Image (tube, rainbow, N blue to C red):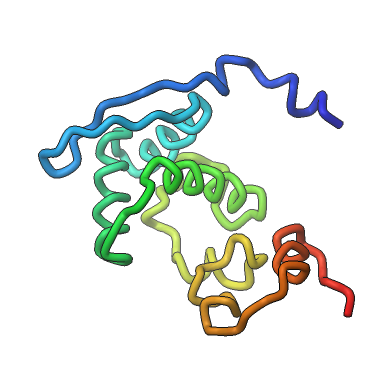
Length: 145
């Protein structure tokens, strides 16, 4: 089992720090090379550099949530989400298809809980889950009563 994961090139999990200017403020972001590569692919699909993509994601996150929190973590999740949506055939693997051309609602409709928008999750609507139910949901299982 582990060979699938340990056979990854060490270069893919080496970290690289980039300085980016977001609205005139220079900040440093440290991500593993694989994340930078995925973010570059996402940006290229819409004719953007990585820096332009980061600015766009930052702006849309602020507009949607009012704050950013841990932007590096958000970028890691965005890269993983992109790959998971490709694996679920919601985003075409053909990189000539721009992300902006996709209907976001159609892409996100009926996804497993971990990939669905937060506003569709029961815990966001005031319904509390037990730790067993929460863990089972994260692993695609149903908790036994």
